[in-house]
Length: 448
Image (tube, rainbow, N blue to C red):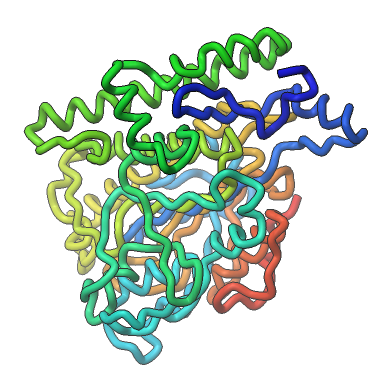
């Protein structure tokens, strides 16, 4: 591989393994040499992270607007990335409301989260929602990357049957929709995502993984020759970046192995890499690692992640909350239930902080991977007891390639569609559309 043959699409190859490269300074210089322009500037990415059952808003919402706001209890784990955040209050998903369709708020909350569309109330095959913002982007820019988009989750789900008051399970367990009638299924197994990212083709994922496991070899062992040849051509800074990246890949691989061994020790009927980790926090963090790796290597620029399905009644014994999440969300004003709910909310935000800090730790161009990303985190239910859909708990993290003025609490007029934020994000991704769901325009106030 000559100096000028190394570009953003270059990979390290081995037997059944293909490791994409992170952003290197060399890419910028080779692009300038080729066409005299800085065409290798880092791309922009976006991800959407969904949590169920709303939040305890009094411990979520900052008391002051603008810069210098104090992080409330639930958001305190974000202190190290506060300057990279926008806490946005006042946004609404009207189509998450019943609007004559009766109960089923949880199913609606997931299906409306990224679509802004009223789902058809049915538990049959005639489901209908709307195209989600991630897929609207993927349909325009997805061809630029190995994967048009990446859909992840921590809880599986059925695609049929009644999961919430006459709504199909497809609504409760999916936030990504490629068309009005087609939800995009999510992957819940970290190992399978890892293999998918680093296999040379989808057809040999299982065989490549099995061969490595049989030989007790890391994926890095299979690309070591290619890596050495590349390192000989790189400058000191790029060599350091490549070494840090490969070390990070190996660390994720090691944690996957530990999680799998832990599952076997826990008495699970373990069948290999398709099992999910027993530890929920580690499961979430491994999925966050997959998104970070996918963004870092430009394997995709679009991702969604459901930390749990809509209406999830998961218990949180590891943080001394053995009660079911959904049951607690119907708190009825009970102070003890409030305390437990806010602990669950804070736990979820701690995992978001892990992801954002990881993105911020990865240098890219003149900034970081977080600077070139837009990460939306939140729920399409505001208060779990009221099941209301106005004043939603929404965070936007990342600089959007230098186009977003972060470090603020931004309050918009109540009933402002959440989809207006999505329209603004699509513009920044170079994937503008006429509308998403019930959007009425772009969200003002984001710009620097």
